[in-house]
Image 1 (cartoon, each protein chain N blue to C red):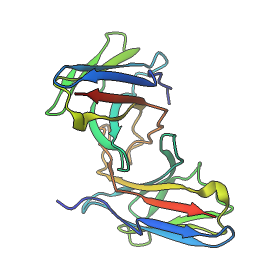
Image 2 (image 1 turned 180 degrees about the horizontal axis):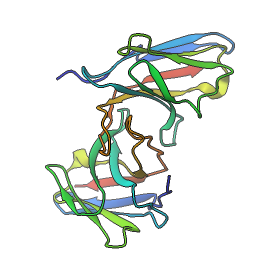
Image 3 (image 1 turned 90 degrees about the vertical axis):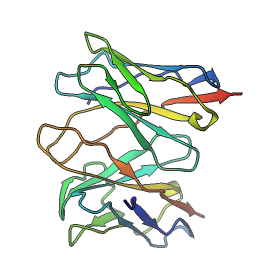
Image 4 (image 1 turned 180 degrees about the vertical axis):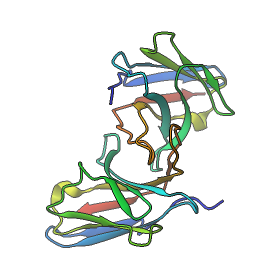
Length: 112
Length: 116
C-alpha cells in the first residue's frame, strides 16, 4: 500500500476551520484515502474516506486533488473535543475489508 | 447499536507469562482485526479474519502470538510467553465485508498490556 506523509503537529483556534494536509504521491488507482482520528486513550474513530471525488459527511470534508497525490481533511468548525491525532491512510480492499497501515499521524491541538 | 467490546481493559503480567485478550465485534460484522499500538506510534495490524478464517496474518509474530475466531464471532488473541517489548495497547476492530467497496473499521477501547 502507498505511504502517506503528514505534518507531525498542528494548532487550530476553536471555532475556526482545521485543514489537515496529507501527501500520498504513490497512491494506486484502486486505493482509497481514509481518515481516522484517535482521541487520547480511545480506539481510533473513522472520519471519512474517498476514492476520487471530494466527500462530505457530518464530521468533515475530504478534498482530493485531481491527480490524487494529496488530500486535505477539513473540520469546518473545530471544537476542543476535536483535539486528537489524525491519521491519513491509503489502502485497497482485499474483498474481506481493508488492511490499514497507520503512520505517525498529525497531532491536532484545538486551542480556546 | 453496541460497539466493539474488549476485555480486560488493563493487564499487568511478568515477562515469560501468558496472557489472552477477548474481543466481541459489532453484530453482523464478518471481518475482525487485531492491532498492536506501542506508546507514541500508530496502530499496527497483526491479523485480519473474515468469519472464522484468516485473511492475513503476515505481521503476526507467530512464535509467541496466536489468534482464533472459532465460531466467526468472538475472537481471542494470546501471547505466550510475553516479552517486555509486548507492552502496548491491543486494539480490536470490526467491519462489514463486500466486494469492490470500502468499509470503515469500528475500533474497541483496547486492552492496555504492561509486561514487567
